[in-house]
Image (cartoon, rainbow, N blue to C red; front, side, top):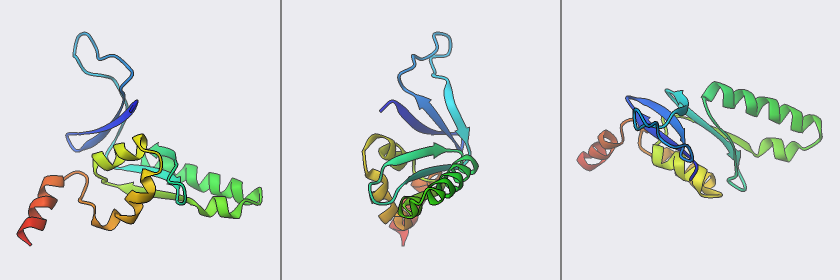
Length: 128
């Protein structure tokens, strides 16, 4: 539970919870701020490889797949999955904290609410 995403003012902030909050502001320094977030993981094991800014994660995945294929590891290259977008913060954090959780999240991806408007999505489902 060292790394944790929080949604503030429509942006995802990544914090290292091991760092002490500032004595002046009472808040921790963020490691990353992004409008959407991406997570790269192994489709079979659910192991998280990388997470953060979608452009950086897509670039990492493309480069890593290319390198694995060049080394003859075709299956390992095909197993790398990248999911990006406005994902629910609790799902992102579970991916970081629970080994293999990404695999479960991938199966439920189509039914997950919009990450930045979870209450609106819940209200829409109740109204329908």
